[in-house]
Length: 344
Image (cartoon, rainbow, N blue to C red; front, top):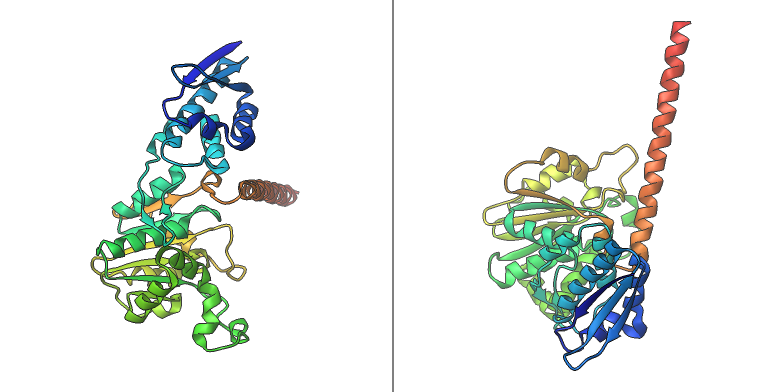
């Protein structure tokens, strides 16, 4: 039996680490095949880790040490934060957790600080800070759009830019959009709703409306960007996987002086007509390696929604890999038969 004892330096840390009804402790125990218990003494609380496998005990200890430090910065250790630490350490990437800082990007109207919750998100925020153009590519729920909007709000508040421009492709801008009630703005609002929601949370509805009236914030379909030069602006193109290569080139060449652009999208959820190439897929290949352009890829570990979302993404990726394998085998078989028949 191997044992490790972690002494608690912060008041209430043990309760936070164990979680409500010991839910956090059970996650750690199940993942690393160890047992945890609290040991009280005059010198303070300690968490005792016991396990048959030394490597597992060390991994559990690393997880508890990380959560111990995190507990001093937050009132509650969420299931999400605990699961992320377990996943990273279990995959042998625990040292990467040191990159996850405590920087507040901005504060919502309810006083909630917006921070990067994963290493991938932290790297994404750093890339936006350092580069003029950033392409954020990854699955749903990784915070691509939300963090980009947060960085835009921060830049506006710090007077780094004079306005925020948010845009998305409205790929059904033909017949289907025409059946929606109201004027043009009413018709395109459903496509832009996620952008509204993020801004409402960070600025409040009333303040947002004032900034829209002043022209400080503009939300419009991608087609409205044509022919413009956007100076002193923070520009976000959301759902960029639904932009064509021509639209993507048009958008990127709108960039003016003292402006920053963030392009976000999920290449696995393209809604373009069959056979139409995604502009985001083209851009990540064409722009790779160009100075001052950052390309950041998120993974399922960066998903900050319900844990089930990670499993859904993994299941679809597994299905796509299997489908690609079968397609490859089918093509090889057809090629082999064609070659064999040509020799007869």
